[in-house]
Length: 408
Image 1 (cartoon, one colour):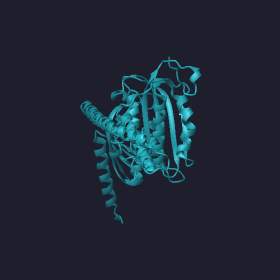
Image 2: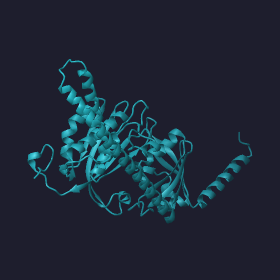
Image 3: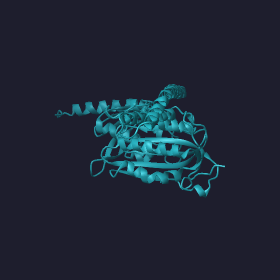
Image 4: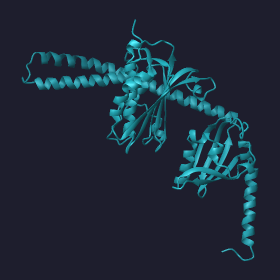
């Protein structure tokens, strides 16, 4: 209970004034935001309650124009970048967030060229809202960050290449062992009548050897040593032809949605391998969805410029067709995401081994001289994004079911 002389009120006001002065003098941008909720109690946006001078500099707007403004109306890119969902999770879980993110230069009113670049920000729960500080990384820090990213990509590429060489060597050696097993099993079966002693045993030996041979073919695909029949392919035609099968694969509880651009370009590919990529990714998505959900398959053309973020990785500028498979499943934590293409990695219970499905997808995309990316967060689903080089090779209508140009 406050004293009647008001001394405690004055003391609190003095402390608040000191705090405001400290925030105002802080070079980092600082924002205090409250949650804005809909009738069902869901957070739909955040409203600026307090902003310091650093925040004014960052957003190129005076404090008076920011107080009371909705964050996502002012910065709509926060939703598409997934940052709004992260902020909402901070309020819901009470767990603070520390992360680096890239903010594009904002053009036009009301931003007037708000500074783009890499930022480090801390976000902590504050009542029914957020306290957020942001600091722009220096050019030296940005260069260091990009070097670390490139080193990590190089380490990952070396690890995958080593796995591919190892897998290919093992598969070839194992195939050499399987060949005489299959040969002698077939020779024995040819000399026996059905129902004769040892006939069933030899039949089981041949069946097991054939299954092992199929597994070796999958491993060879992962190691990129399985030959392909590459030809001009209309990716949209392949997806359309496979659509009924994909819907049967996921069952009635999962909806498959297709979003294909009308002007989708051609790619140089093996259509059977493209089918295998889609089937493996859709099966993986189905296993990640527990109580119904959506798998979205989309494809569109992309003109990748030298300044685009993707070009900073091992993608070279040029014309691509981008294929995406997105699900609303469980998602993956960062430690699993970093190893998602490794053979026999599982994101589910240890009794359910994921096998070679995603490793085969990785190998097939690489065989097509393409690139594959995976983005995922726990509880937010997963998206696999593949980049295939566009081709100007013409297609012929007599193979319209596949969208293929006939050989010769």
